[in-house]
Amino acid sequence: MARPAAVSQPGRARAWWPTLRRWLGIAFVVVVALLVAKVARQMDWGAALDAVQRYDAATLGLAAALAVASHAIYSTYDLIGRHLTGHGLPPARVAAVGFISYAFNLNLGSLIGGVAFRYKMYAKLGLSPGVVTRVLGYSLLTNWLGYLALGGTLLLARPPALPPDWEIGRVGLRLLGAAMLAAALAYVALCAFARRREWRLRGHEIVLPSLRVALLQLAVSCISWALIAGICHVLLGRQLPYTDVLTALLMAAIAGVVTHLPAGLGVIEAVFVALLGARLGQGPVLAALLAYRALYYLAPLALATALYFALEARGRRS
Image (cartoon, rainbow, N blue to C red):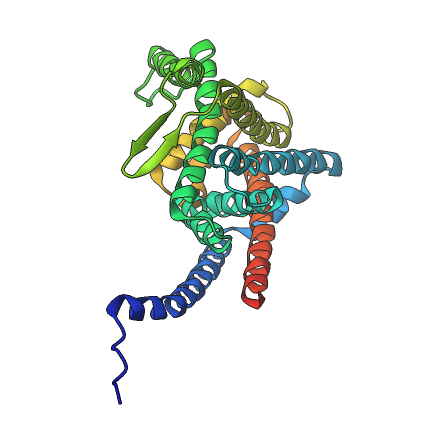
């Protein structure tokens, strides 16, 4: 009687992979739960609740509506990636992934939220890592394209008055603004006039969008950033010009990215106080930012966490 053939090493690896993938998925869920708990412990809930309660219903309602609109617009960034990559996932599921990853990105940092969540959730939905990388790249490009355009325009036309101990002056800010605006316009021009539309970088295919898509990226990103600044402007009592609040937000955003602190804890507050505290007072600025964090960071995080675990449970049942 013939002996059965030995199982090949590749066959054994394939047999182990489903079990390993399940355990990796469980580990990811546990890590997410621990990170959410850590953020919850770091937040001064009493101060945030007190700050929110000081506002009247109309102010809170307007700020909350702006927050919903901004998150909704950000969720469309991955739909642009869906169009450019041609994958066939339903738009509602793509928007859900965009919302969940953005909420976690705000609170836990880009590596966990913007990157890890997209790869994890899109892999469950059947997308290959290469496609996910392209979707992620287009989403990041969309987000920062509007930042460059808005920030460059503001710094070039109306640079803010910086504290004396900041090394860069108004001339430096205008030069920085010109460079930022030039970068955004160069991308749009490249999409409009470039003859070569495809490149390969480290095994990944990069397809240059059409001018129409590039203008759409620019528009939705500018609107999203403008809405975020609108939340802060409303919570600050509209006592300052909107453009000053927008400038402070954009400078705080890049400071948060540079410092790599989850949720930009302390960084956003420091920049806002430095730029706006002399005119409004440190207390009102910090109170407004606490309310802003509650509405734009924490409330969406709670919803995204519930939605993520609901989708995980549904996936396991399936």
